[in-house]
Image (cartoon, rainbow, N blue to C red; front, side, top):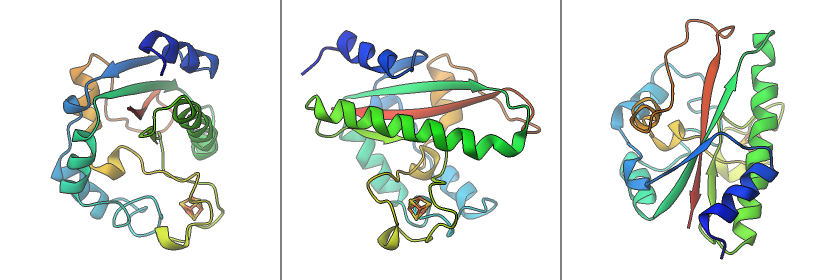
Amino acid sequence: MLNNQELEEKFREQGFSDFKWIDPQQIIVSQWVRLKCMFGCPEFGNSAVCPPNTPSVAECEKFFHEYKNAVIFRFEKQLEDPETRHKWSKTMNMKLLKLEKIVFLEGYVKAFILPIDSCYLCEECTSNSKDCKHPKQSRPTPEGMAVDLFSTVKNIGYPIKVLKDYTEVMNRYALLMVD
Ligand code: SF4
């Protein structure tokens, strides 16, 4: 197994330089996040990686409690054309999946990435995890796992705020569970 410094080298080799280690017990899981998914998000019921295809909030909490180490990756981005945001996040998600595999192959059998955005691999999502066309590459977001990202990243000193439109600078976050 690698030590944390050696893992950090792996992250940087893959182009990820803005990250912080976080004790998984500091990852805040909240019921209100699930309610926001259920009421107001167009992905609810339309994405195989989003609620109601993700575990219950209680199960999500249990999942995070099973880990001792995690990393938060920050992605600061401003897009000239906001319509390209899903294309950009799809590219980032794929890079993060590659990193999950690298960490897994180093012997971290529980390595699991929660990427920055919903899965947009297919033109049309099957809307249920059972029929997902690329199950090896699809993962839920932290929000899909009921993570209160606002509180979690603020508590470790990372910036985050509500954006009024997609032309503003975004701060997006991914979580890599490492054990
Ligand atoms: S791989 Fe395709 S079917 Fe599976 S979650 Fe992603 S978009 Fe949906």
